[in-house]
Image 1 (spheres, rainbow, N blue to C red):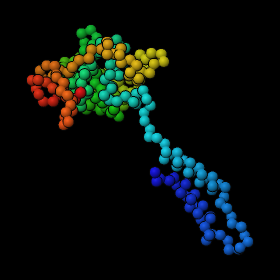
Image 2 (tube, rainbow, N blue to C red; image 1 turned 120 degrees about the vertical axis):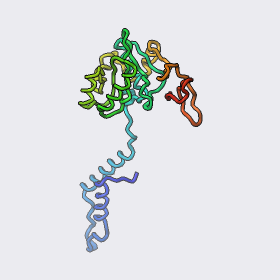
Image 3 (cartoon, one colour; image 1 turned 60 degrees about the horizontal axis):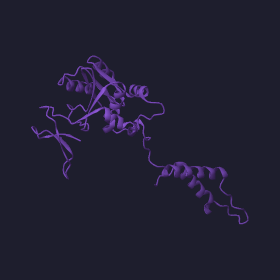
Length: 243
């Protein structure tokens, strides 16, 4: 790494000028004046700072924290949260697909009501009114009475207003953390997915996705050298969603 802190570079210049022969006295018997102690300390401190900065490893999110949860794991994490809150969980075996907003990977069942949960905006900094409107359009085709939209960011005031008018529950980062804290066991790290995954898969219903056009079960097509793994409908063979 070639970067040097300004103080370090300045100290080198001053040290060079101090010890340069051109700056030394011409009297033969007069001793050479050494660099000042303060200048040496500044140079040493600057070098230590530069060395630590250049050799420090890149920063990564802490292991088993919310920041370490990949968007592909969001539905799994949310599924366990709502399972502990008393819902029956239905989770699609397909991964979330931004190109197929009709596909609800996670839904909650309580009584006769089914509530889709959208984590499409999991990494959004702020969810806008337009994104809430997109969810509204999606659930209107499936006649869901309500929906839940989750983000680790925030919601704009207009997004909150539109959601409140249309039975859409919004979960931002503070709300999400509060609900996780309410169901987390003593001394448990809820974000360590492997610690509760077996219980989740035993109690949740994991299902293959269905075609949004004809409701037929989709068939899984393995990946090839040129195409990713896909779920396809036998009646509508255009690719449906990635696994």
